[in-house]
Length: 322
Ligand code: SAM
Ligand code: SF4
Image (cartoon, rainbow, N blue to C red):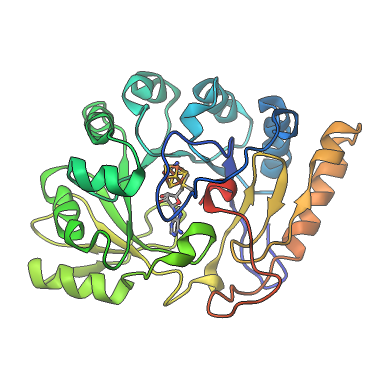
């Protein structure tokens, strides 16, 4: 479906929980209060929202969080989501800690791709950034996903003075394995406000030094805003997501559903549409569709990350779903 700026909104990110088994420095401060359990949408309620979205042409879904795999029944939910009529691509974003054991079922479901967060390639730096000594579990999850033939993309948030030395080793994983590596400029949302992003431009300059002849790949890969690069020595692609320094609002194709039922049409603004009253007070499917349509109609033209406005988002990234 089109928004008022003519952009085709075709993709929804669904946060199934705001809880997480890690505490990444740039995402989740220690003091984040959990949303009370009754406020969290039940899986059946989320499926109703997704069914309404597919009828409006929003057919591609990513399950995220918090950490989606810490919510009981998440993989079963993904299966049911994939069975809804009209669903296009089905994707998962995870920190990978509990991924290994889920891989066989994700393969059986036919998930289209799995994004795994990885901000360091050694045990100590990983622990320093995420707060937990679980690098080995995450790495095993990545390898299990690859071995099972899943399409894997690694997400690395690039932060000056924190993981700059890790960027090249992580990029080189795309030379050894058939996976894409994407570098994300850290965004000034929640705990992310305290970090200085390594810009997309700087990352491309670093990559060009080590992969001379690096070339932009203009073929579309997924629903995200990453610019991808290819090189003869790389089995996968390296992507750069420079939301802050460059921005890609003109082609923004997405909306977000938070775990407590808020529909959010732009990462930057705090404005949301609460679907819970419709879901819990007898609203029918047409009321749900109308609410989604209205939210999309009011989707803002662009983020204002460079300005500290009142309407700026106050929630943490783990509450929004990335
Ligand atoms: N727990 C899962 C994970 O880490 O992949 C899914 C949720 S996490 C909020 C989704 C994505 O948002 C991750 O790739 C994470 O690195 C990214 N993210 C979190 N905070 C960020 C920030 N301040 N700037 C940029 N990306 C951020
Ligand atoms: Fe958890 Fe993902 Fe946020 Fe890290 S980035 S704290 S893994 S939600």
